[in-house]
Length: 213
Image (cartoon, rainbow, N blue to C red; front, top):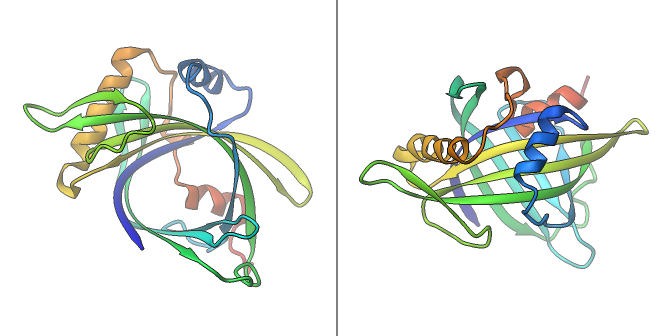
């Protein structure tokens, strides 16, 4: 089992919006990772997320994330505000053919583009972009992901843009701030308001609500 602490901020965007187009331009030279399908269980909670990546003949990769704390809405850069949340993620492989026997699940087909930054904490936190395949001990992933899903037979497409800082718990805020500085120095990002900021758990709750309702 793998346990990871992270500090995250995420926004959900409508397809074909000017914000999505501007972000797609910034990620333009970044190859996407191909389609993958994640199954999200409706927990009815905004502080708990459970997903499974299922492939025929392979153990399910399951991930549970729980909210440790939140800094609330934070102004990260001019025009860029979002909910900063600290999460703990537990990942493991699980063989259970009846994994989806109970509960309400939402299948999300994801096509992700990822850029990654390594962060040196001294002298003064500074972020440097590295290959998406690199594994720095301290850094931040920056992703743009297309989400295709269907609810009650209606197909929908949305996009999510997010930053996930990793490393020593005491320095996660410095890591994320250093990455934001590096990004905004490279290019002028579109406006990302706090009203569009949410975690996957909160977003799922807005789509499905409480499964027992």
